Image 1: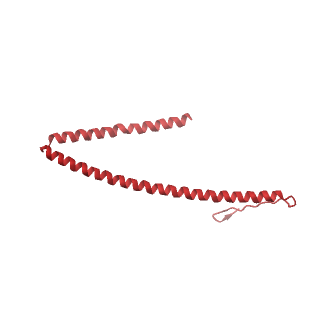
Image 2 (image 1 turned 135 degrees about the vertical axis):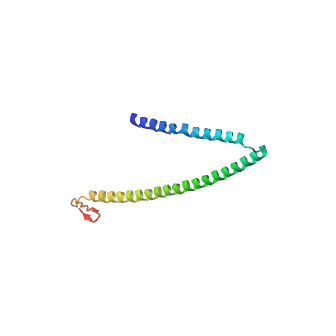
Image 3 (image 1 turned 45 degrees about the vertical axis):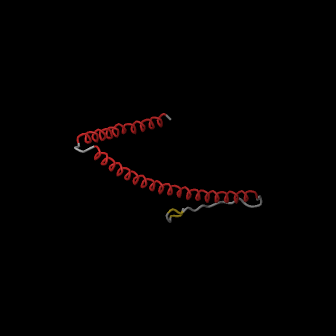
Length: 130
């Protein structure tokens, strides 16, 4: 249990170690944008117009990315659900087969006048009989 806890903690520390870099990149971008705004020879109205256009483009880009991610997530969710349905069906079929076999064997054991049966099982792996 201690080993699992150590791995979880190490994983958390590795994940947290990535955040300062990302925060530094974002902070650097914000400072750079602020310096660029202060140094450009534009009027306030021009700057507001340009910033508005940039925000509109960024919003559209984020919306497109969101829709794409949503579609991909939906696709994978459907694949997982399909796999779960197939696995459930397989488990039901195997369970029913085992139940039928157990019932048949139990019935055979209840009949005292019959000789004990020996069961031979042949397994075929890629055409090799055993």
